[in-house]
Each structure stands twice: as structure tokens, then as C-alpha cells.
Length: 126
Image 1 (cartoon, one colour):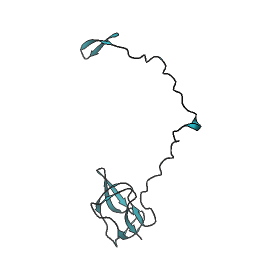
Image 2 (cartoon, rainbow, N blue to C red):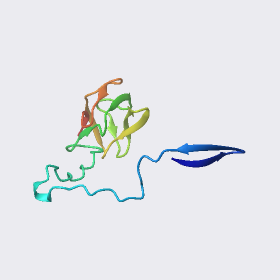
Image 3 (cartoon, rainbow, N blue to C red):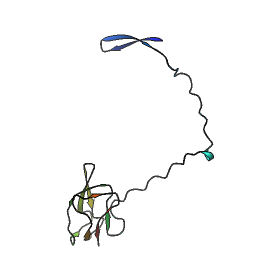
Image 4 (spheres, one colour):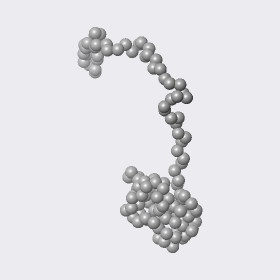
């Protein structure tokens, strides 16, 4: 047992502490299997970057899971590069889905309130 004094603010407390282990002693070495026979798989390569605009020319996909909050274009609308097409709500953050290039909206495949997953096709342009 060790006796210690702890001071908090203006008050001092005398306490007795039982030493359960000695932290100053080096930890025992743990034998590890050789790398070739290790059952642990090597780390995987870094995940590829998430798509941000189109999976194929003219196909706009969702870069993340979320809910379609508003659709700001209609089928047949001409859009410019960077124009906001729709707003996607993901974890209470509003994300703008923009046109990767100028074109015409040919098909909208979601509606407001739809829940989508990452990679879900939102609309098509030509």
C-alpha cells in the first residue's frame, strides 16, 4: 500500500492506494507468427474515390446515401455545366448535385422524398 495526498482546489485528501501491477517493469514479449504464416490478411488498398458526377456520359449518380430533398430541373430542361440539378439531404447536410457538363435533362429517375444509396442513378442527360 502506498499513501498519497491528493489536493483538489483548497482541500487535501490523504488516500491509500494498493499497487496492483508495477508499470515500470517491461511488458513480457508476445510471440508473433512469422509473416508468411500469419492468419491476418494484409491491409487492403485504399478505397477508390467516390464518384461525384457521372458513372457514364450523361448518367448522374448519387455520390452518397441520402434523401432527395428537391429536384430543380424538369425533363427536357437545358442545363449548363455546374448548374444545380437537385439537393440531396445526407445526415442533415444538404448536398448539391450539379451538372458535370452542359446538356439536356432526358430522364429523371427519382422523385422528391426518395431515399437513395451511393451509386443510385438519379437522372440522365444528353
